[in-house]
Length: 421
Image (cartoon, rainbow, N blue to C red; front, side, top):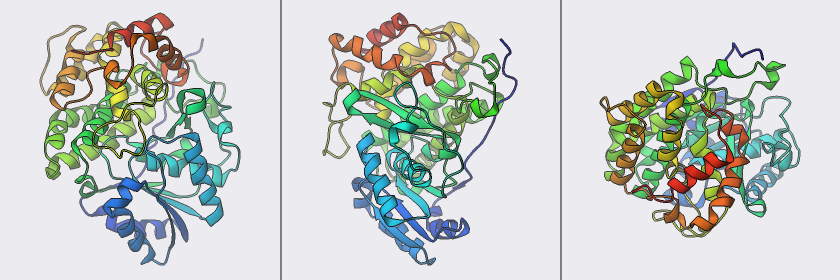
């Protein structure tokens, strides 16, 4: 096998700072947009941010078609609704205001509006056909209101397919937003539970990407077009991931404790974007692979702090519950790097050994009142086979794990994660 010698580093241009969202219209005009679809969800719409940003965009002479029906934890059906809205309104650009769900909805509406095809054609294999868009998409300005997903900087849109009881994604470099505006003032109204979940997603993004399979251990692709978006750890992605871990350790507890701690909120939003750049190049693996079935096999959990219109497992919580066991499993593949992650999160060197990082993660989970394990999300041991089967379908993610992962390995990880303390 001829090994890879190349990695790529692409990143969304980011404008960061308090009040930066006031420049949304200027950015869209710079991108040549004349009629935009503004994508948000009902919860964010109720806060008034989308209407304010809509007015700022219209002040630049740009028409705005407001779509406020993005679904938290999107489904293939909710993505299709957004596609139909975009086509009906004949937009030439997109702006998303909200969390990862709104940003991902705008990505997919942009994709299918620009290159029409059935949605399942674009969904990652083996669930979908994995069709690649033939050319770049229309401009997309992403304005996050949460401090977590990093979707403003990534190439992926995540969706649930309830009929198949699987959560998966659409991934291609052209899905990365054209420009991002990260304004800490937009996250001040987030409830503590939402800040906790989204912040834990930041931590997992950064930890998993830093602990992913090195890029130069993969096989060289036959064509540059076949190089995957998730390429494995590399020197540039490591810089972004490490800084996100440091900020997560320093500021997540503060951001959860006090919504008016604008310094902590700002650094967590910055950490989310940084982790997005890191994992957008390196990738995520076992905890995220396990998270997809945890979020999709059952739809019974009703999280505190979120709209009560439908039950779902918040993404950050679905990821973190298996992270301690998963990263204990991967420890022997790269002990020094696991110790680095533990030290960055703890803010000081930790004792060496396979339990150091899991213990740091569990302490963080306790401090911000995260769910204690998979069982708290409504699952029992009888559900473990379905959860393992769902994780096995996420080969796009498991391929960048730092060591091979078997079905039995996943079973042990999920079993150990039923409760974390």
